[in-house]
Length: 286
Ligand code: HEM
Image (tube, rainbow, N blue to C red; front, side, top):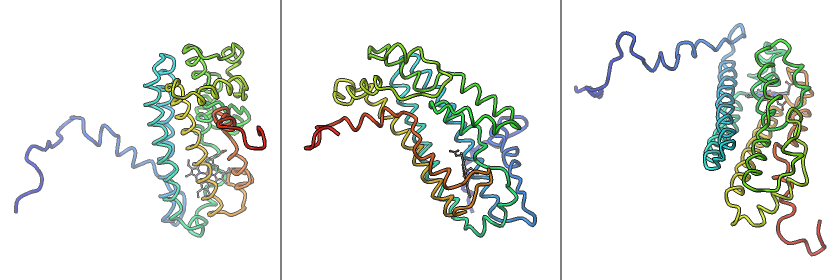
């Protein structure tokens, strides 16, 4: 019987770089350490899903570095390309929630107490992402006293301009009327919605055919913001399905706390401008 393996396929030898060595497969597969005893089958899924989220968060932050650099270099096409990759990853992150929902609440309760007080609340990469998008709530730092590396990454993100600051610089260089007070704002603080920025964006949307580049950049950021919100919705629905109205392992009110976060927006003006598009209602401007 003839072999289905082609003759040309290389057999790794000696210290040749291989799939296993390059990707550190052994190390990767050694990182899942369930705590339940006797072992609970679903704890492996719980660990792997969280670890894969953290890997994708890492990739998103890596892509954000590039998108910011693209804006600094006035490379709108590069930024658009990178934002597309980010939103494609986000889409997968949202869909991934349903894998976890194959675990029943009863299965989860078999090992949930072992996690206490660990919680997604303590994901520093998630918080860095929020900070880099302008939601710089310094209060979150206090939850990272025992995680100095994570705290340092958060402090770095707090001190640096957020993505919106880079966008404002780019738009000003493209000739848009971004106020000096926005361009010289204290970047260590949370972004506060600006009427002047909303006015600029509204003009772009009202005349999008003559502002194609800026229009598509703003639409890409709307996609990113929306994808993040969709993840928040999907996560809180899953949490309610798993634990109902119980408090979280991180000590928050759980579903109540998470529901309040659904109001968060990274780019508020990109949302608010939409109320100004089109003609006024028959009852006048609303
Ligand atoms: C059975 C599955 C899960 C349950 C029951 C659950 C529950 C919760 C709860 C109750 C909170 C609020 C904080 C607290 O008091 O703990 C929370 C926050 C959070 N969870 Fe989950 N979670 C689950 C899965 C996940 C997964 C797979 C991720 C992926 C990374 C994740 C990421 C987060 C993040 C980032 C927060 C902070 C959200 C914010 O502050 O806006 N969770 N989770």
